[in-house]
Length: 375
Picture: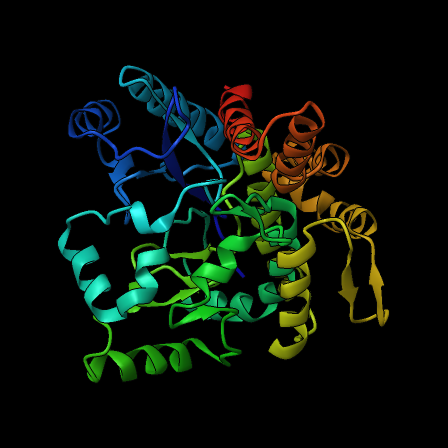
C-alpha cells in the first residue's frame, strides 16, 4: 500500500476589534487590499464583515505550517494595527451583539443567507480547519468513519468560546451551539464507502438543494477542492502554538489509522449516538471533566486521555517530525484552554473591583495579547 503524503494545511478565521473600545469593527476595504497585496489568495473576507480568513499553503509538515502561519498572523496583525485595530483568534467575541453585525456582500454569502434564513444572522463565530492530504478516495472514506471517534478530544483541547453577548454561557465552546443550527452540520454519518458518500451528495445536488459538497459542514468532511480530509470541529485557538499542537494531533491520527490499516487492523467504529455524548461533554466542559472511554466503560480525565493519545501517536509524530508539537498538548493541559484562561481573566478583573463591561474588555485585551504571544 502506497504511503500517503499526509501533507497539512491550516485555515483560521479571526475577528477584528477596535484597539480603543475593544468592540468589533468591520474590516476596512483598504486593510483588506493591503492584506491581499501581501498575502494574495491566502487571505479572504469571511461571512461577517468583522471577520477575516487565512489559509496556509500545502505544507509537508507542521514545522513548515508554523512558518507560514506565523507570517500570516503577523501580516494580519500589522495591517490591522495601521487601522487602530487588532485581530483576535477566538471563536466568539466576549461581548459583541450579533444583531449589530452585517454579512459580507458577496454572491456566495448572499445566497447562503437567502437559503438559510434567520439562523445565518447569528453566525458571529470563528473556527479552525485542518486539512490532511490523502490522495486516495476510498482511504478518505475509510478514515472518515474512524476519525470521528477522536473529534470530541480535538474540540476539548481547542475550546475558546465561553462567552456570548457578554454572558458566561457555562459552555467551553458556545460556537458549536450556534453552528449546529445550520443543516448538514455535526458528526459525519457512518458511510460505508466512497461511492456511498458520492451518491449521498449527488442526491442533494440533483434536487437543487446544494450546488456541491462545500455546502456540507460536518465536523469532518472530504474536501471538495483538495484531496484531503478536513477536520472542522475545532474552535480557533488564540495562541499559535496551541493551533499547531492540535494540527499535529490531527495529522498524526491520520497516519496512525493508516498504519493500522496496513496491518489489517482498524479503530473500532462506535455509534454516532455515543460519540455525540462525548462531543457534548467537550462542548460543555472542555478539558475539565473528562470524556467517556467506551472501551473501559468509564469517564476518564482529559489529562489521562491526552497522555494516552501522546503515547498512541508518538511513533507517527516521529515519522511526521512533529514530536515537539505533540508534546505541547501537556502545556495546554497545564495552562488550560483559552476558554479556561478567558474565564480566569474575567474572575481576576471582578476580584479587582472592575464592573461587568470592564471585565469583558479585559478578556478581549487578553485575547489580543494571546494572538501576539507566539509570533
